Length: 287
Image (cartoon, rainbow, N blue to C red; front, side, top):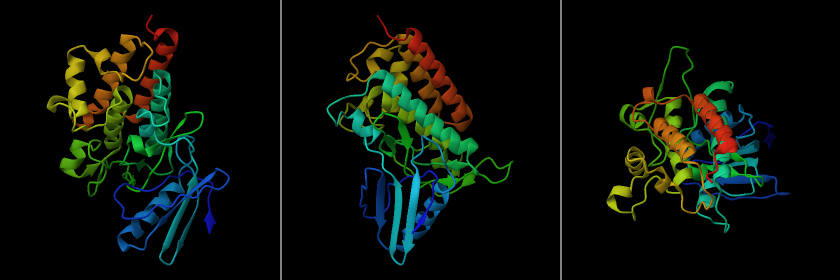
């Protein structure tokens, strides 16, 4: 077994693998993959990517095994479940607004590191609420690099041409149309995720009325009508200043713009969220 102290995560949503989680001293999580040839390249790709990254908002790789038909990845154990579970109130409690804002900032910082500060640019390609893990202190860590790809290696290369992978509802429409992957594809997914954090709704909810089934379209309409308070997750009991909400919903909508040229870089997103946080701490709680 070979070990590394670099950051990492678990596996992507499409595999036929059987996950087995092992917890040892509440510090390690392991996943075992069956011997399907189609998964071999994904496994190696994930290990290579995880070995190159180290950031407090990315799940840390502890080691791996690649022997015969057995493939095992050992990652940091993150004890508090997924963001989606907390949005659903799975532990009997719902996230308050400040927790949601801090989680969004953590995710933005993790993605900024991947896009700008890793040894080589990394595009996650599957940013979603079930791939965000929470620590006991409610800090967020981006997980699941099974679909991640290296960005363009040449300074003048703006995209990578690749088969479309990801999760329905979070996928960049321009990427689906052109097969051209860029960091702005992660920005789009983050925008959808930020709306999920604010509203509590999944990107697609088929049990809703027809005009509310696609959360992004519903939010866009409500935002233009000036009804931001109506979009806020009703499970959040505290009052939040309307101007703060307008800024957050506006940022999410900008991130989820249909074309990449209209989306901000992830670093800018993080900076704007931090500014919103400062406003919220000063006067964001509505009296």
